[in-house]
Image (tube, rainbow, N blue to C red):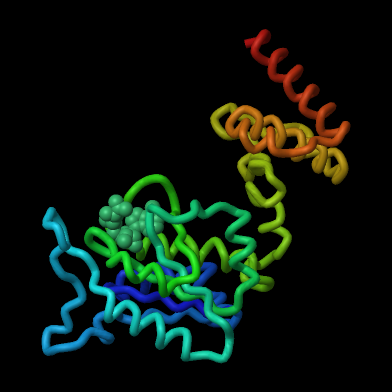
Length: 250
Ligand code: SAM
């Protein structure tokens, strides 16, 4: 997978895209990430990339010429078909379903806006528009980092154990079960017995039950979208009974 990030601030992305999971994936060649400075595509001695908005008002707007030249160069660069994404708070919200769809691409180009955003006419030169959440950050760079990370996790070989992405929250429509590690007793808080049992079936059942109840408590909207099996219904009831018993006891 090739990710190209068009940005006015390539150095902002250096560390986030070079450390840990992404750094290793790049080193092993599973993913390739290139940043391109939009300024290199601007004309004139000062390579100006922004200008005042028509109609007046605060802030600057990113000019269309350098952005579109950068997009066109990216599209022409490889024989693979590029999927060009404009990062904008006005785009489709990034969720695991969209991440899964993007993981099937082979060349993703991310356009990072700054200031008040990009000239409206740039939208005609991209394939989709994506937002990382209903809030506004100062530039597309943090959004690009999030998208590259989330998509890369689904590419075989990027995670040490590919099945860990399958169990992650949202992949099966549920939040993931809780995790515990040593010590077995942390300030009086113990590990659930099922996890210490060594019985794989019992552990799997406990994890499923926790994922179900956790999702019901925190993200009812996710649970409502799922068709639960009879076994899931039973586990959920069991979890609710256990919770009620614990509340009564405390
Ligand atoms: N004035 C714009 C608006 O209200 O829609 C926001 C501009 S924002 C300060 C500057 C740039 O940051 C945007 O062009 C976009 O590239 C990026 N950005 C900000 N919030 C984002 C979000 N939630 N998702 C994706 N990109 C975002």
